[in-house]
Image (cartoon, rainbow, N blue to C red; front, side, top):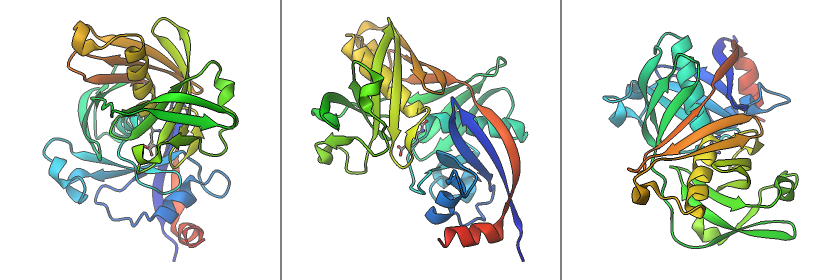
Length: 290
Ligand SMILES: N[C@@H](CCC[C@H](N)C(=O)O)C(=O)O
């Protein structure tokens, strides 16, 4: 007999997610099931999936349960697991607010990238404490077709290669992943950002996400870009003692990123729930079986 699984659909600057509330971690969300749900033609469609679980009920999050009641078990649209999703955390917090699990103000969310502090503002925007960037040494190169660019390796819990380009169109159709070398710099794959300047402290990007393809936004990517842009502009808040703020335009909207003198990075942007419904478990079982 087929039963139902509740879901919601949401987005943050058009990085869109299927949200599956499962407080006690009772569902077996296999990679194939996630890919079927995120399929844009045969499924619900999404760049990724936010599995909403109580930290105490998830083996990867139990150690964070004292700090954060809820764990964002994030999956990419192809079913793979990622450490962090910046837009996802905002949408996750919006879901918790809508479900009555969180109120306007501050809350903590557990992720594979650690506990993130979240502030839900009165005006609707959500700010996430994204932690510090790591900047692994070594040159990396991003190539699309005949064009290559030097890129900055930035780790926001998940891996990024940030390339400054003259024109975002030079990234091509991004239907396949850009090549990034040396491959050894990214043993677990990489998210690639192409960036142009829009003005002082203002950039725009396109992104090819690991496990999802080109998306309309990437929160961790926007943070990686802001840090790369600041260093390129000779700004290191740890040295100047002053915060550095960048406005990052993405195809799906705008994010504002601030890096503080202690290295802490904050990202502010919108988060929207657009629908809710029920998944037919018989359909999911069949779709996931291929
Ligand atoms: N869209 C996300 C990043 C999602 C994870 C990424 N594709 C990866 O595999 O690292 C964001 O908003 O940060």
